[in-house]
Image (cartoon, rainbow, N blue to C red; front, side, top):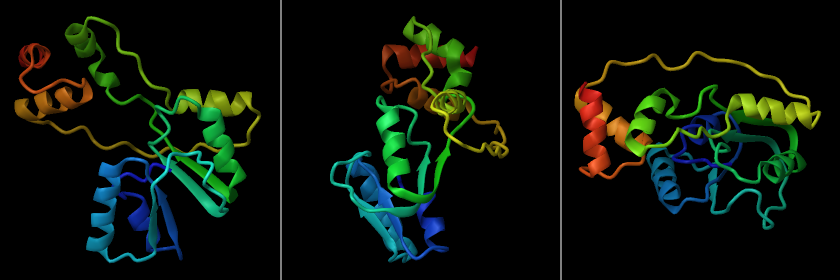
Length: 179
């Protein structure tokens, strides 16, 4: 669910008979279709729908939601549908820190309000525990922190803080980063 550009769907398709990639975003589906063509993976089927969907009536062996549940407002129906249509295993890949959390002070300085993190691993564990669901947690090392240029840092902050290029807030953000 939320296949994005295929960073999980394509590698998985090399090891299974079929991958159904559910992706609601037209832009991401376009990226995914191009990646499928480029990789020559005919066993990836792309579905244009939001999960959960009343149009879905197919059972799968394994379901995967990789970094796609953070902003789901109705998470319980999402998870219930995953479980209902999955024969063996439901997998969610989550981060332990919300995206952009490392920019919390910059967010407040630029937007004038505190950063409101999206739910992540901790909240998901609490929800599954409260619902008395059986689950396992496995951790993997994160990507190493890279030293990036001022331009790279400014572009990253712009994206994570939802700033328009060369806007007043973007210029303020850059000035703070330069300090």
